[in-house]
Image 1 (spheres, rainbow over the protein chains, first blue to last red):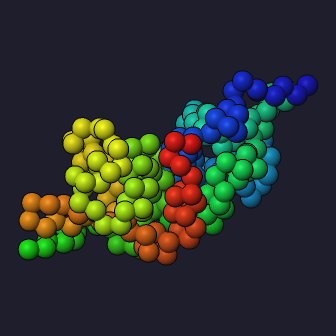
Image 2 (cartoon, rainbow over the protein chains, first blue to last red):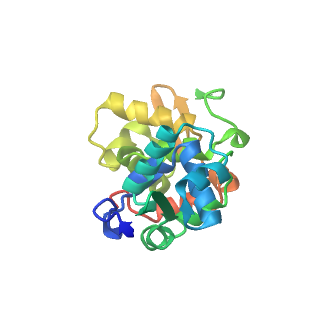
Amino acid sequence: MTVTTDGMHPDVSELRLAKVLAALGDEGRLTTVQALARLGESDCTRLQADAGLTMSRSTFSHHQKVLREAGILRARVQGSRRFLTLRRDDLNARFPGLLDAILASPASR
Amino acid sequence: MTVTTDGMHPDVSELRLAKVLAALGDEGRLTTVQALARLGESDCTRLQADAGLTMSRSTFSHHQKVLREAGILRARVQGSRRFLTLRRDDLNARFPGLLDAILASPASR
């Protein structure tokens, strides 16, 4: 069974630039977003491994929450698995060019 | 006498994406940057008035420091006045398209 976690995701009209930038203003969250952009929808356990994020599960969970609340990613629970997707179209509609500029710069810069 | 405040400004090669985004992830700092982009080099007292930033002087000072340390603006002291400029060319060189995308979105979004 797929459960979409609506009510947990701001509508595109509610996305705030300062909140999006603050959410992306962290190396771990930037790396997460860049990995999601590369991989497409991802199981969050696999994403953490593929992105080489060596932080604890609880830290990674916290980062997901910050990114979700800012409207940057969408979470979907299926059975015991949790899938994440980048809200690329919503971000592009609201802040044209922003995501592309961020994805073009390595997080390590 | 003009005193440039070098040593207080990171070199373009030292600018970090996460730090730049974190610095911009605040409504007051975003408004400051958008006003500087519009006005060009500005006396900081006048900038605060022109940008309609009703925060205290010490909060505005703190915001300037965060923006300066992230490499987003340059401060120059002349007598008792302090002038600020946006490091537009440095930001464009290091993170192409980022500043334009941010300036194109009102801070209030």
